[in-house]
Image 1 (tube, rainbow, N blue to C red):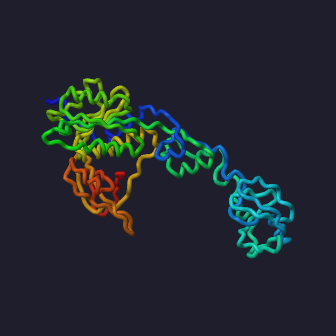
Image 2 (cartoon, one colour):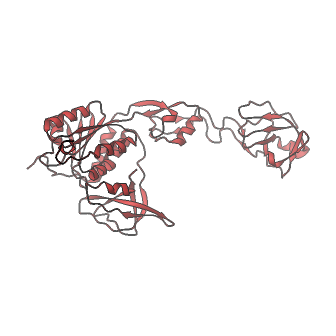
Length: 401
């Protein structure tokens, strides 16, 4: 029997659990990046507020600040000066009002603000032109948004423009994030050689570099355009150097030119699992070598894409410390599908949004080599014999982007 044959396939949930266990054992070095460059990065530590917000009682609008009781009893009140954002105002003189702009601190002695358009100006005095606002109206209170010490960003949060705005308001100029993993992608096969009789362009390396780079990895691409064992081993050693993890495509099944598993075993790699009960993507093999996780993906681009989406992408998110899984998308199935016993089948679907919510439709595909199906799809559905898809039921799709 071929020692590389797929004799003990693991199921999809087990394979994913093993992949995430590998990620849990990986180091997560921290670095700091300028705040404006933090989008898409993962916070490496909790970030706490150093000041409350607002830092003082401030006006919620342009208008006039005054003591409510004084205005109720003695309107109109003479206007004494103006306070703008950034001022540290003197206390309000008793029996007076003060012009104030949005965001300016409320002067001591004032407990009400009314908008300028709701006030009547009488010479150098003002009085309400509409009913007098309630005491405390139009004042944003110190700390009402959050107090000093509030956790603004949790460790593991994937940062975006909202967090950038929040941290910039605290005066932060940089932020602690996990270092971007260095990923080497190696495509294998003599068919990739420019002079091959039936040369094929390499679509796998650009595809994987784009997919993994989009979630924060630093990706370098390599090619082993040969079926020679020694040459492939040399290319693999070059790809491993300086990488935190390696992704190979091709050469991992049981054909006469599939050498990756033997090469890696000869290098001392330990097999985490050999083959997964999924369709497409069964040859997926994961190994560990020198503290690095190595994903050996099938060469067919459709199968390689599914293996990367369902295993490599979650692994990378976990390595970077992202604390939440990518959310699945609910939709009503517009078709029926079954899967063979013991197999998880991944089906590409489109999502269509209507008045009753999202509906998904199956994207036609010719199998593991199909790549145009992904350009037409929005998500993947997992189907098993125990959990078939029936038209009209709510299903959950894994987004492709």
